[in-house]
Length: 349
Image 1: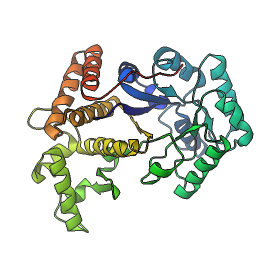
Image 2: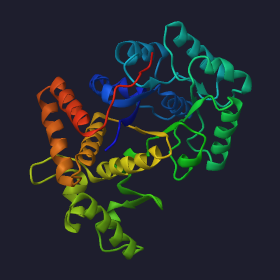
Image 3: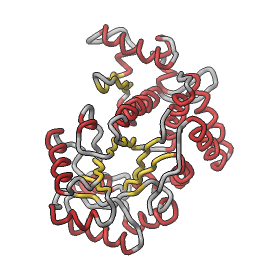
Image 4: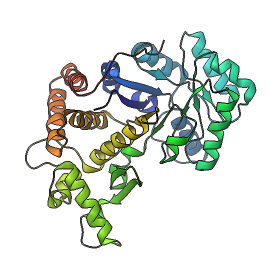
């Protein structure tokens, strides 16, 4: 059983869907909800535009972000992050000051380009400090960066590692919290995931698991056996295309196995990270991902963890969703209240 779920959602996704915004607002009393501004998405959109590539999404604007925070997040969610501009201190400083002038207290981002002279003014806002550079950097470099910033703040800053969710570095890095979006990649790349404390993360393509051929048949068999045992399924069910795609022929929930195993791996890892007195946030790309994550957490908290239990919880959420948004929020809240050791915590001011 977990005290609270740790969820991160990017405004780059939230701005497209009002229901997603309402869902996070509804569950924020029962979970640590961290709102990311979407700065990384803006950066990628600008790079694509500069290279002449087609762009599907739209950039996050400062005014749009602040309007969302005012209506849906400020004073409700655990915290939210400044709309920084990657490697651009002038625009980052402008956005931060604009948010402060409007009465917001975001977690500042210590971007690449800041130095020790920027520390006092950032810590005057809040003791939580986001540190960029966790995506794509070598582990040696980024951990050294966290260490140096911690020393510059004399240990006062509670550092949040943006995009840093590595094993085993998360346990030992100078962090109070971090996040990762990798647990939602399974459906995109066709992989199943598990977490083992002594070995870290293990990913396998479902295509290889479901067929006789494999480069390492023994490892393949052990992986299938582990997942089948974990979810109370047979090996035949684990390698069934219907289960993989979320097409349950028995009439229950529609949960694809990559997302289900990703959520389970995240909760297993989060439990381990919490033992080091740190918080680990999972980036949720959609409402559907949140529904599955809540169902998995409730199943673990119920003491009867199995695919059937998860399916039953997910079905209850899905059925409520089909009736009305308010009914859906009510069921999600009930599951979190009953099966997690939640407690009211101070939220963003």
